[in-house]
Amino acid sequence: MNWGYRIVLAFGAGVAFILFLVWKTMQVDIEMVESNYYEKEMALNGKLQATANANGLTNKIEVSKKEGQVIITIDSTLTASITNAEVHFYNPASEKADKKWPLAASAKGVYTFPVTALNKGKYIAKISFTSGNKNYYTEEVIFIP
Image (tube, rainbow, N blue to C red; front, side, top):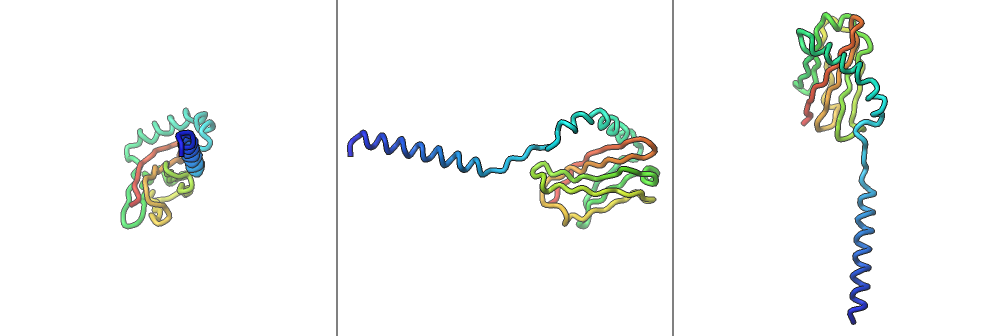
């Protein structure tokens, strides 16, 4: 075999390798962090005020994990008149693993969620609610082993 055939063979092998890499990268699922980021950016000022309201509470909103449950504790004076309340367990790795649950008015202010409903990994518990015509919002990071 002379050098001409070897060069063509090497060039063909290089092209085949590049095509293989292109095919492999096309198989990877790429998700945006937020699918509707523009609408969320427009609501940022309201979110900042709600975060300031939550940070101004004397009894902070707490998120803990005990005995196979995620426990969210909110001051009972706020939860008695709670409306438009939701907890969003946001998984930065996969939008498919996100979970949202509504929060109802409660005299105790303790909400529990099963850990078995969540996949393993890092979650950000995004808690938002309205009480007494004031909006509240906070985020807490939790890890599900």
